[in-house]
Length: 259
Image (cartoon, rainbow, N blue to C red; front, side, top):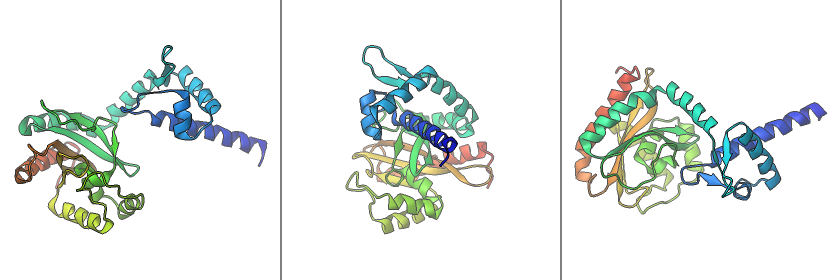
């Protein structure tokens, strides 16, 4: 390998490390020390320290002088604003979510499938929200939530297979961990046009979701409502599912979809 190639490989490795570091921050862990980052990512402290210094100089991270912990910087916020402005689904879904929350009295959110995980893009809370971690940017396994199962149901077969190969972890007694049962369940979701989760991810929490289509007729997101099992009861799901489907169809039409 030539010196030029070695330099190029080192540069790519540094960029990859920087991206891994940035993605390790979350709502659950908004601040981290160099030692914590190094341990969680399997990197040398010196490597992490150099990378963080570079990111800090460009405003992508900020170091608290007292705690010595790093958190994400304002440069990412400005980039996030650009992304949000370009995401029609984020903009078009907001008024529909507001109306749905007023109608059903439950928290509603928009989710998409990313890297075999469901990630939440938009959320509107009700007056008495259930305490579940579905904040914007949160990632969850797709096979145990109504929004995730909706997205999987309309995903390519290789994506479903990849999710199954990664392993189906049990979160509650109702989590579907049998691959064959999951495949059958996803087929039923496609037939019905909506999905439900009855205490499959969190005990005491139920949800209902429906697909959102783009102008090409492709499922690009899922709209879901989530609440405690005392409010979202199985007996109420048929009526609630109609409202969720109607709201999802409204967003789809805003995205240019016509049946």
